Image (cartoon, rainbow, N blue to C red; front, side):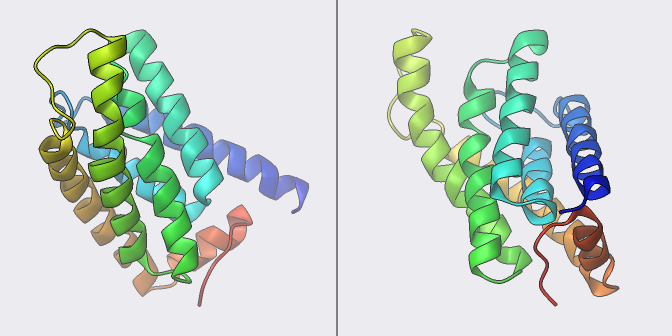
Length: 173
């Protein structure tokens, strides 16, 4: 990877992190942050699973530190972002696979992992293992739909592939 691609990747990630922090309050209710899922899928498709995980982790930490968001900011993002990137690559560039990865990773895995985090670490009572699944699934469906429409529009005229090439990411024709 060339030096200018590394810089471009870092700038793109910084923009996604900034955008993720700024737009996360839109449509947000506890346990449901659709705009975070949009960012996760876009990062996963544009950069890959490692960078999507890193982006989700940094956004979650910033949201927890400065917005008072509970650890759901992490459990509701990192699994979906990573699985989104992995499934996108395994499927050889199918956008729907990235969306499905976000839904499974966040809507199911992240939601179930959130139970012990919130119950044991944060002292929340009255929770069950599946408490967060409905809201996490709903958030991923909303954010995933927006991401699918956005990325499909970019893909129609090969803009998605051009962006991926410029970022030095894997792309599929």
